[in-house]
Length: 343
Picture 1 (tube, rainbow, N blue to C red):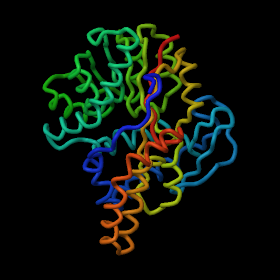
Picture 2 (cartoon, rainbow, N blue to C red):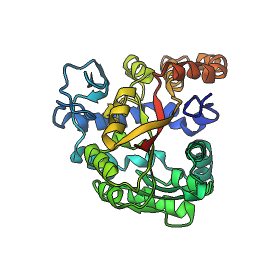
Picture 3 (tube, rainbow, N blue to C red):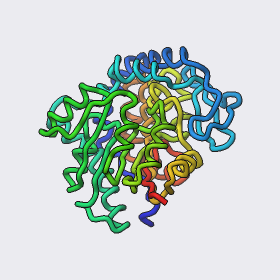
């Protein structure tokens, strides 16, 4: 398989890190519903988040939110805008990021090694293919959270530091790493950090979809010529979106909560072009089959068929990697990792 385009990744023990999604479905759904309440109070979205094209009627409704497909770039936009008020409520006041914190140093390292080391290895290997030595890689990680990716990059010999809006995440991450690699910033301060950074690689793992002022961040990346590469992962309009429409009583981790819009291949390419970059490498591995598995087992349990849910799990789990690989290769799966290179 060409290094330029890579598909799939084994689920491994992913479900052991997502037990709350299964065991506390109703609580997680209530949390997402609360965020939907906040989003529905925001102004209606009339233009595409990525290309600015005028939006028409919603393509579908999921968990009370209408979603419209952009006629120009296919980007999936929620019916209401993400605003500073929305971001302040769901990221700062409610400290949504706490749902992704590890409880102690051992679990921090375990989560880092399971989820973020493979991402850091991918970045290192692609940039090595491009002729960049590992000790020449200097990373600014925006939306760094607890610093899992920063820690993973440092573990592999790259230089990295991060910024995030959550003081609790930053404090915990610095304590877990044993050094201050993370800085807490205001909701719009990432723009200034991007504009001034001397880093040659900007990373944004599951972050771009959360930026209220995405246009200004794109402009800052374009104007700072120190930044030669951008490594990001984004949620995609995908089978997971379809599954969430069908299972209204299950926690909608993909199209809902803080995900107010979803990317498509066309909208990623449009965003890259606006930055003055081009797509150099891409890695497609989604969690669509994991979402479907969760929806089915949670629904069985709700229907008083917990014992049969266990029977189903024994049959289904061994097939999940193979099934997800089919969806990944269809290029309509839930997540895309990509590396952009300055033109």
